[in-house]
Length: 123
Image (tube, rainbow, N blue to C red):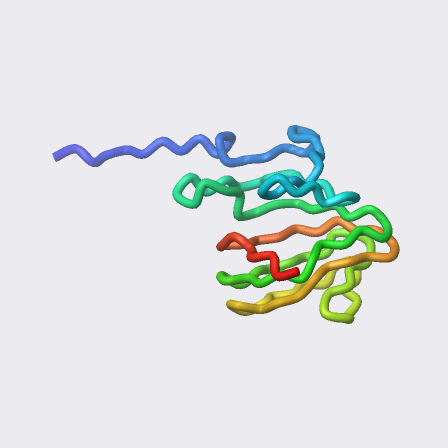
């Protein structure tokens, strides 16, 4: 009996630096001024990206929203303000299911987000 040999091509799963360009963040027809996105992992079963990079220009704000599936954030550079707490470069935040907050920045920042379920805008 022959064993099945699976050949994985890791290159299919890599997003190389500068392979994708920053795009304006537009969700459901709403353009969030001063926020740009690079999708990293697209989940076909959910028809959306679940892992993204977001870049906030100084003063940009993402509105108050709910995370039905929780969220993970890693600050790559700059400072982000979430729930009146400043997250600095290298900080990590896990938000549990149904955690509600907004995001803003005075200085600008870039962050890695893992968002298993689509957010619900509340304001």
